[in-house]
Image (cartoon, rainbow, N blue to C red; front, side, top):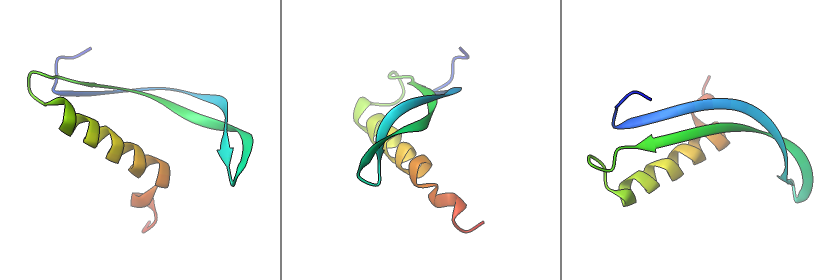
Length: 66
């Protein structure tokens, strides 16, 4: 891994059970690995960033205007 403050590794797509419209169904999930240098970024802001990043990806909010 390169030595940067933030590293995001994109893995494959796996099929797992998940809730969709109130029912359990087999869904596809993108595997991501996020690594943050704790010498530069504290844990609380890093956790908030990861939570916001996940929300943006799941909702595809940035793609709605395209």
